[in-house]
Length: 121
Figure 1 (tube, rainbow, N blue to C red):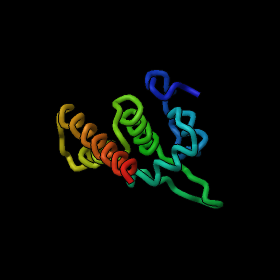
Figure 2 (figure 1 turned 45 degrees about the vertical axis):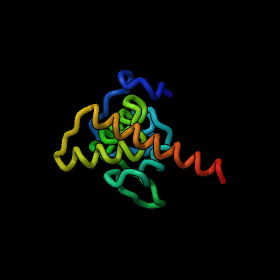
Figure 3 (figure 1 turned 135 degrees about the vertical axis):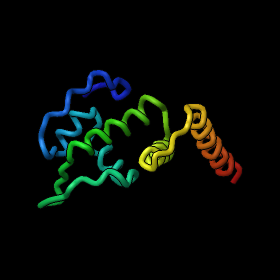
Figure 4 (figure 1 turned 180 degrees about the vertical axis):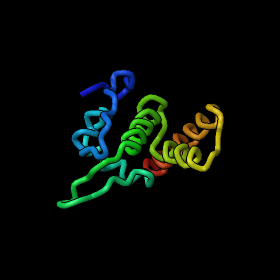
């Protein structure tokens, strides 16, 4: 499997209508269990489910997975930060890189506050 931090080595997406979870895993260098988890976290990611609950991803979903992968592994976003960025892009909103970094720092501060609360109890 490819290094998740390196997006330049990803193979090109073949011109097919549907892709299995195994194919998407290889095309995006992300393990299948991670793809299933991302389906729960990102409402935009909804593969077609057919017989036996098998997932079939369309080309636009493969591209979305690559974008999610970039946000998480390359840009350092949290899951909630990546979700917010994708929602903002869908709504036509644009924010500067500084705004995104502030959002990441805010997420980290909230998480650290939770840890402090747990340690005090």
